[in-house]
Image (cartoon, one colour):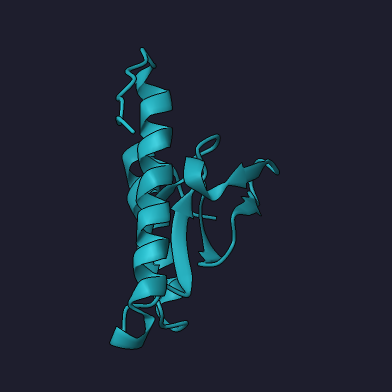
Amino acid sequence: MINTLELYVVSNKTLLILFRKFNLIFQTNKCRRNFGAGMVMSKYLIVKCPYCNEVRAVKGQVKTYTCFRCGKKVKLLKSQILARTNNHNEVPILTKKFKMKFLATNNQKIK
């Protein structure tokens, strides 16, 4: 059997989504393989909604989440993951930190 490589012309957005999907699958498989060695998935993720740029925390095992600001159901693969943590005490601190960072760039006040 001969392995063939097929090249397709894709947009940058499609390429980015495919890269994130591959990266997430690779990390998940790597974590499952090395579970006994201390490599585990993060319990919590700080993500940014791709539609309205709202920052929120989600559990690490979810595939989709609903944005609190725009109400859209978002796939985790389409969102930008800003931080990962296993400590539940760090979640509100990290969320507020990234909200402040993005609001400062837009010159808005935090609610």
